[in-house]
Amino acid sequence: MDRYAFPKEEIMYDQERIGKAKLKPAGTFDRPMDVVRADDIAAGEKLAILRAWEADERALQRAEDEGMGGGEHAHLHKVQSALTRLEEQLCSSSAKSGQDERG
Image (cartoon, rainbow, N blue to C red; front, side, top):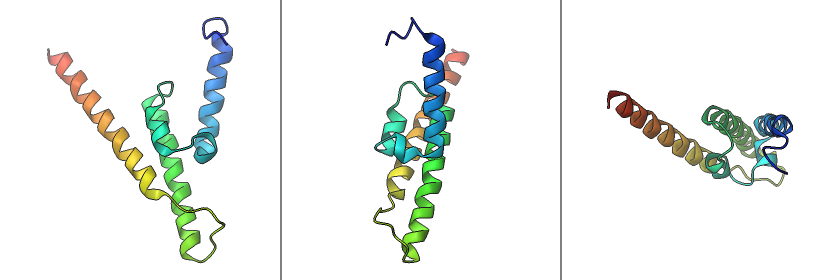
């Protein structure tokens, strides 16, 4: 699909994809780091997706701790690593833009 031929439809698809990712991150992305690497998602949206994923993983971990595992294993550490990486990127880009303004 040509991005410029149907910009409105493309934006709708992106918003729908982001909305689904916030509700079920693991169903939209294979790995938490894929969220960080996505070039077509704003930083704030990435943060929301990863925080939702973190909440899901914490719930899964609680279920496992209570003996109610459903075959899936919690990967909280992978989500936390992705959050850390995203926060580092945000801090470095914020520091860079601050230096550019002082120029």
